[in-house]
Image (cartoon, rainbow over all chains, first blue to last red; front, side):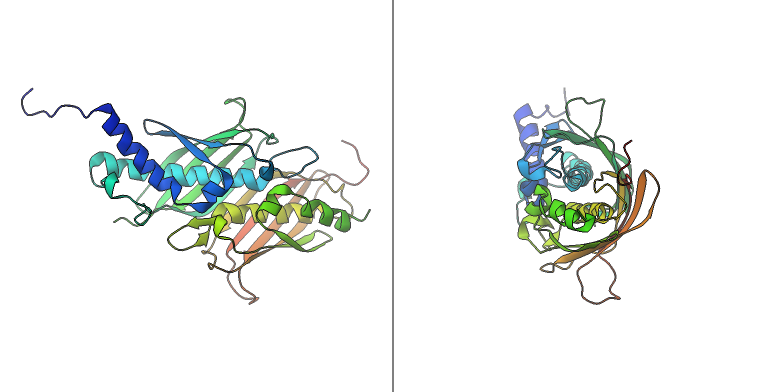
Length: 169
Length: 144
């Protein structure tokens, strides 16, 4: 095996990726306010919205507030897109995750527009969401996001949004 | 009860709207105005202190729903079918955001709503965001 470096230890790889994701998410107060968490498997992210009484819209049903759902979808889309940009940068070595700190946060994309489609009533329980970047160009990106609760095949809301890519460097 | 009065009680009681600090300013005949004071917990960009788009979306959704609830010929109940939000510019850090929603048309089953959100008292100021959406609608006294 001349001229080939040995693969990195798995802990080193995981630590680097987790640190980068944490830096992306932790600095945003609104994400903490809603209590949204992210589960990472390789480059795939699943957003989790643990149920809180404060997320309720109509207390008589009770159902999740459409605004809580819209916020969850938008956060998932922005972090999903931001993560896909950051992933390339850390895996290529362009950005060293050790240099990422609360003072030097990765820049996040900005929302241009978002269309939310309410498919079913959001139940008073945990919700999950995944974003898919359908196009990511130099300036603009188009992202689709789906949210579900008990059953992955029965989403309760989905959204498509357009985003302005963060300026590089 | 009058739908504007019932709507006021309903909107004031929404836990998520309360958590975001929303205050109902006006509600009557298919028009609603709700304000949301600046709050550091709602920041989306820590570099600038600008409020997260998701919080603005929540304000738009609530105000649009309130406008439908206030319709005098409606059942006083609604749910969002879809909502599109355009973000024209970042809200000024420190400023409260005021959203005005108008239900401009209803069919037997659907209410169509437009909304604008601004952080300025100037009537000609460019809105922070605008929205257009479709909401469920039922005429008063008609069961589906």
